[in-house]
Length: 105
Image (cartoon, rainbow, N blue to C red; front, top):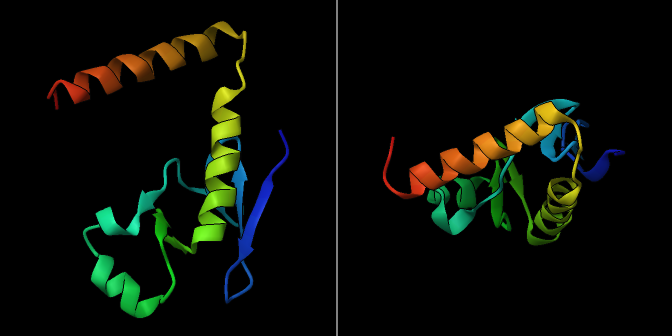
C-alpha cells in the first residue's frame, strides 16, 4: 500500500500515513488520532496551533488533514492479509481491546 500524503510541517518534514500509521518523515508517530477536545493538553495545543482539531502523537492536524489521515488509516485497517502471523496479530489486538474495555489494565 503506498503512502498517503497528509501535509508538510513548517520545517519541511512530511506527514504521511504508511501502513495504517501516521508517520513524520517516515518514522511512526501514532496509530490513532485523538480529537483535540479529548486531549489532556488541549488548551496549550490550541494556543500554539490555532485551528488544530486532532493530534496524532506529537503532530497537530486541522480538520481537513485529520480527515485525510483517518481515511487512509481506515483503508489500511480494512485490508485483510491472509498471512497467519497477521491474522494472529489482529486477534491479539481484538482480545486486548475487549479486555481493556472490561477494565483490565
